[in-house]
Structure formats: C-alpha cells, structure tokens
Image 1: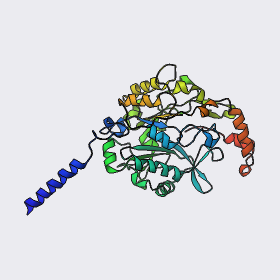
Image 2: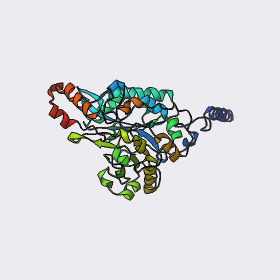
Image 3: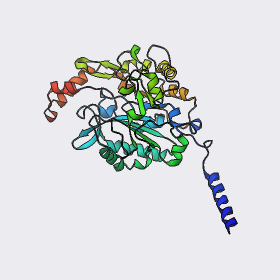
Length: 366
C-alpha cells in the first residue's frame, strides 16, 4: 500500500512539474533573463509622480510630471510608480502638493487600476512608493488597499525594522503571487500591515530637488542616518533609488518640471546631466546599478533603453509609449499664465487668498 501511495505521489509531482512554466517559456518584467534575478539585482524604471499628468485631462497642468497614465506607463515597461497621498474631505486622495492644485482622485481608485493591470500580467512585479506628507496611518492605507482588492498581491518582508539581506527573485515573487512591492515615506515600521514598508528602512535616495544640469549627484541625501555617506548607505543593505529629474525655479520659489531640458535629462549620453552618464556614475559609486531610477516624462528620450542596458536585456511584450508632444510644447512658456489662471480660479476655494495659494504652491516633488 505504501509503495502505491509513493508511486501516486511521484506521478503527481512529475505532472505538476511538467505543467509548471519554466522561465524559458515566459518573461518576467519583459525579459526571461530577469526571472531568476533577485528583486534587488534589477534596475526598475520609475515614473516620478505617476498619476499626476500634464495632458488634456488636467488642462496641461504645470504640476504634471508625466504625459501618459499609469496603465500606459506599465505597458511601456515602467515598474516603479510613485505618488503623493493627501487627506481631502475625509478621504485619501492622490494630490500634487495640495488637492486644490492637482487632484488625481482617490488612492483606492489608482490602486484598483494597478490591480487590474496585475490581473492581466501574471508574470510582472510592480513597485509602489507612496509619499505620505499628511501622515496617513497604516490602518488608513491598509483600508485603501482593501477597498482596491489589491492587498492579496502585496509582498511582506520578514522584518519591517531592518533592510532585507536577501530579496526574493522575480520567479519567487511570481510563484507566491506576491507581485506588488510597496514602500511608504514615511511610516513607522510595524508588523501591522507589514507589506507597507517604511521607505527609508529599505531604501536610500540621492538628492531630488535639482535645478541645474550640473548638480546631479549620487551621494545619499535620505535617510539622515546615511546622508552624505555612500559607503554606509550601500553597506546598510538599503536599495538605491536614483532621482533623475530636473526642475525650474520660478517666482515665489515655485519649482516645476523642466520640460525644456528633457532631451538632456532623459538622454542616454551627451550633454552634462544626461541619464546614461549619471546612471554609470552611480553604478560605479554603489558597486552595482541603482535599484530604481526615477524620471519625469519617462517616454521622452532614452530612459527605457538606458534601464534595459543596465539590466542587460532585450525586452519583449511591451507596448511602445507614444509621446505627448502637445503637453510638452507648452514647456515653460505658459507657466506664468497658468499660475495666474490657477490663482484666479482658486482664490475663493475654501476661502483661500491668492497670497495664501502662492505660499502653498510648492509644485515639487518628493
């Protein structure tokens, strides 16, 4: 009897193994070569302020950091999505600095869009970074994930208080069904909703408020414990996030995306400040390619191919991103008019004066 049971067990295991896909038959994050790599040994292209668009839907808002929506970003190969979470009328919304400035709607709706994309792309791993200036609690954010029915995809680390020494491979994440990696800046580490990882426990960043092409740097700026200490940041086990987007400083110390220099900042080589050379410098400084590279208007220039080169892959299964020339054609020429129109349209919003509005218009970036 035991012999028959063992034979039955062996047959079952053999059949399951035959039915299980090998990484030769499918692509992880658009490449079979990435399947057996650790999550930490891949460079993930990031869309800075993913839901904040400069397109017709927002009146080509000067606050927008992307032309194309989150679904189009993912289709084109973006695998890190960042957003800002703000409290608005008793709900948690995605707003750029202030909900009176640019409101991209409820957090749960955006998460539901990502969930739908994950449903349709079973061999892809996506990362989210939520900036949390209004201090949403773990319970608040967990409720948004539950509403979006995306929580089942969320990966939780073994420890929430220390950087992971060993991250799973994409294959392992896919097999487990935990294909969503979520960081929050900032949130206290806790085993309550452990999938909401405090960003700076697990990640370090280079400077992000850059207004000159010659000022990009690989030196860690955040968290404070490794500020200015590249070796300490790398040795801490934190993943590296390389911010590479440029801003223009306007009147009232307002900063907006520098769309006029996108051909440089998102270029593979050439003029000072280009993405390819900056990535090479950071790769040398960190001893490996950055884990994340975060850009504005990702489809303009060579950000996608630059990241593919760092990963050493020829991608498959992507939908090429169509650039939105109309949005960028506005450039910086319409900034003063847009700020003026914004002030006129919102000066009575909740009793805000134009002066108060301008003081709050820090159209930046975290």
